[in-house]
Length: 267
Image (cartoon, rainbow, N blue to C red; front, side, top):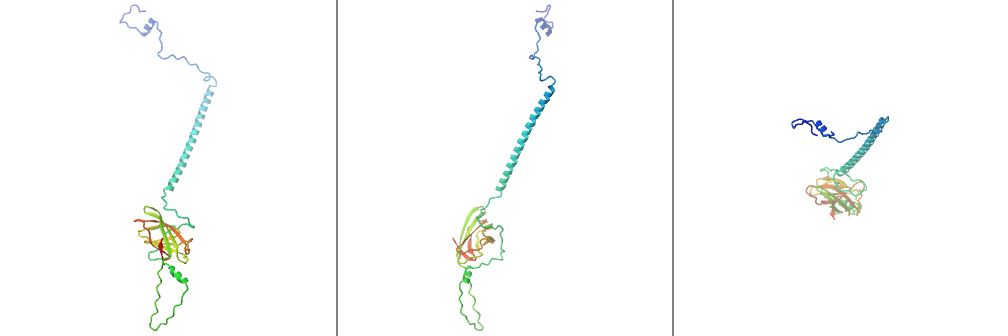
């Protein structure tokens, strides 16, 4: 309904417009009916129920915290144990490659080399002399020395002959190092107690460790002596000697093998 006497330039408010049109004002937001309070949220036991709910929530959080701490402790223990195992395995494998495994013997191998001074060389005992001492002696004819004559000179001892055989083999080799075995057989007819074998390196090799024999080295000459558990070497018997060595200019087979001063043949 138009207002009487209304002109286009007259101002009219929203309320006047609503009253003239008969419209009802409405809120722009959605209508929300009042919420009815629950019985649990009211009454005399409301505070007690709130405290009970708070205690239950705190207890749940404590249980969850204990579980988390237990799992963390277990994981930490596993990490520590794993670390110890890795450290143990690494320390065992980082000690370096073992050059060779010594064969089984009745006593531990000698590990401390003893060097003989260059001025002192062991005096070999020729096997032939021992054989000669055991053989029956013959009485030489007596000669009558005349006045002013010189007594006859004693004949020189015979040169030692071959009374042993030697087999030499390199069983393992790596850059600047090797492992070798030596088999020495007594081919004489006398038991050697104790025995000594020698040889000469030709390329500057050096013995660093031995078993079944006590070694010493002077220059290129190596001397290997019997140890307490293999002092005796009967006729036909063989002794096995092993050693580790190092080299700079190659590793050829040594030469000049002897047994108690007697020359050995190489098998």
